[in-house]
Amino acid sequence: MNTVLRLESVCKSFPVADGELEILKDVNLSLSKGEGASIVGKSGSGKSTLLYIAALIEKPTSGTVWYSDSDVTSASDSSLAALRKEKMGFVFQNSLLLDDFSALENVMIPLMNTGVRKKDAQKKATELLDRLGLAERLDHRPFELSGGERQRVAIARSVICEPDIIFADEPTGSLDEESQILIENLLLSLVHEKGLALLLVTHNEAFASRLEHRYILSHKELRAYEE
Ligand SMILES: Nc1ncnc2c1ncn2[C@@H]1O[C@H](COP(=O)(O)OP(=O)(O)O)[C@@H](O)[C@H]1O
Ligand SMILES: [Mg+2]
Image (cartoon, rainbow, N blue to C red):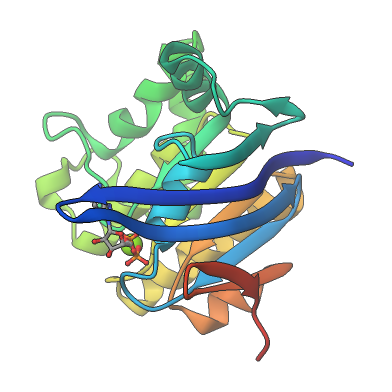
């Protein structure tokens, strides 16, 4: 199997004044290349915490996180940072862009940081922004873009290096319908055409129903979501 990510018996508690606050209990999840999984759940149920653990940003209190058949639970911060940079893309609800750079530059820069030549980076970034309906906005700086346009640029930036897996935390949460559809279609085409894996936290039923796996997080546990 082409398993990209696997969580095994993951538990997470946060220390609080009078002891421990348990958020996740015995969570298991496995995601392969070319597959998407959605997670729904009430506000405060632990969805973002679960996503941060899967994305190697937070450590579980107990349990194991596997990335491509390697146990990375106790890996050093520097090797996790390298893995995140090279293999993972992140999309958050309000992603930040570099204010002093154009939309095109915001998307080109991560690719150039991996050694791709400026001209090639420019071509690829232009094509991606075009697919996201931003062909007329390449030279705009973030303050000259709408919220939905900024989020589309942020998504282009997080997928330009073709990561193995994309983590998205309510990426279309506060967006207009046009932006929502463009973002959904781009993410789904990356999964189904380029073979990326997608772990998506969303309240958007229609988007969730277009993915292979659906989960609900409730009472600290992750279960298959039944409609
Ligand atoms: N660093 C932290 N320290 C203490 N409690 C936290 C921390 N991060 C999150 N929590 C708590 O964990 C619970 C789940 O949060 P979160 O994962 O953000 O939920 P969701 O994304 O489903 O809304 C909340 O009650 C939140 O207050
Ligand atoms: Mg959240």
